Image 1 (spheres, each protein chain N blue to C red):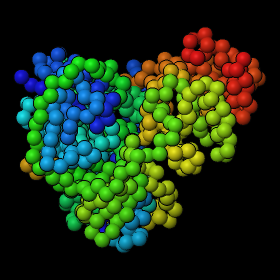
Image 2: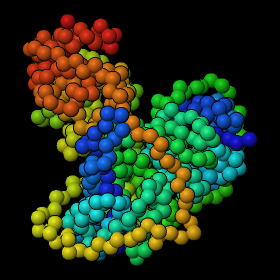
Image 3: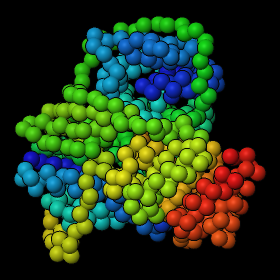
Image 4: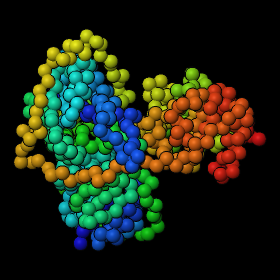
Length: 306
Length: 253
């Protein structure tokens, strides 16, 4: 009997992947095991949980986690290892792939077994195209958030596995949480995002006014949170920033570069406000207003209050 | 200080069109150095300018992939290695051959990647290459300090920032916020053509560890645009009212 393992250091994602592992296991005659490192923690997935323990903490070091997962894969005869597609997850998958000679499907949705191979779909060319990718087993799949409905409640059936003393080549000197402020774009239902159309930092007060009127959160395109530094990086939505899935996304003064659009594709409704009628953002928007944001936002705030 | 930068010659995704069947028209599509790789080259050249040493730029590709290497040379790299792939590789294969090309290029202190390629954005080849080389990997550096025999980085992760350090030789990936890549002058572009560029056949890099191709792409299809694309006209007040009405009608707000 083979096992589908799942792991993410992101607790929410770990719960989703645990569900994904059960579904894949059911279609491939395997069992599912959710992997956690060091200890069970507060929100353990239900079902079979494999706790990997070493002589020192594994969390926070991608090399130690990869080494522990390699040991678990061997001990459990794993066919598929689902790993959360986070920055750390990518590094874990990369090391594990070389160590164990396993193929990696990255950022794949709609995973399914097809003729003994694992197949999934991922965005390529800044999300303008979908590629169907496939690999033989055993393999690794990096899975983003939002592919499976997280399941909690079932009491975990816990098994511990000692993975021995593992090597790491990196020295971790300091960690500090990123200054989050009040922004959590990943879970926001309504997002107003500001772009280069804003002429100066102080003018973002206009965007804030719209955020307040809609009851949402403020995001931005890359220039505002990196080159210009008007907002912290936690606001950056796009290919190299955050992927968002709100009910309503309002792009204000954003031209709609591919890298930005890649991060907003899963929004339910997209609204664009831009003075350039030709701006590519209108091509991916449900509703658009062509106009000067300095006039449109106050009018929109007033219309929302009416 | 011997620095290696790995770059990808990638299809310019903003210029890529779909044919009537929804497939990308790769034939004749423009390619250029993957946008984020320019930050990796810039960082390597800046370290060299501070510390002295050489920057070797390596790219695996085919067709006109040497264009990206020439651009990296014009930006200040000293020599280039063009690995002619002639076959399609997955991340495991690409990283394997890169690790072989890096070993072949001589002693190395630091290998620099970007965070991911602009066309596929896997972010796997950097850390995989480090593992083939059995070297430490520091991923997503927004600041990089090369000291005596070690490299210290500020890493930009999702929920936290980390300061981490590794003994050289080491492999790092840098995020695009780390620097503003320079545009080479006409003179630098002309001088770049005189810098050494060596072409290497993929097969000549093989040893007994060569991995089989595991991951294949079976289909690529344009994403369906299912947006309404309604543009409201009129004064700001009129168009705002129409927008709010539409959002309320849909139940969005």
